[in-house]
Image (cartoon, rainbow, N blue to C red; front, side):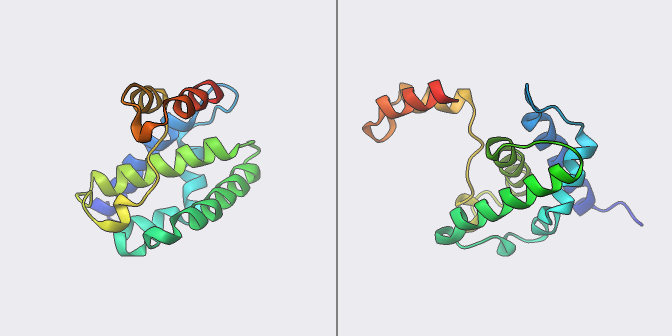
Length: 142
């Protein structure tokens, strides 16, 4: 099987997502993360941003993706929370599409951002939406 740019994009995005989502209390290897993403069928999405859901359907589809990722992780003996599953999905899709040059595509722009402490700190600092107390509470909940 030839090594294509599509395979490279998948491997890079899987590596980035697996490294980011493997956290205290839920450690896993990059190969396991890659396998989970493939089992859940997310690797097929990277072929074309048109394969992503419409913006109004992203939340529902994201829940379905999380459920698939959690089931795939369970099959490997891992216990994923929805937060770990979400981070794996969000980093994978953002790395694959944004770094693939589709950052302006409307379906890519509708994807969930990977949530981390830097983002939460900035949302609070800038008082985005006038919701500083909500951002502060979300930071405490992690």
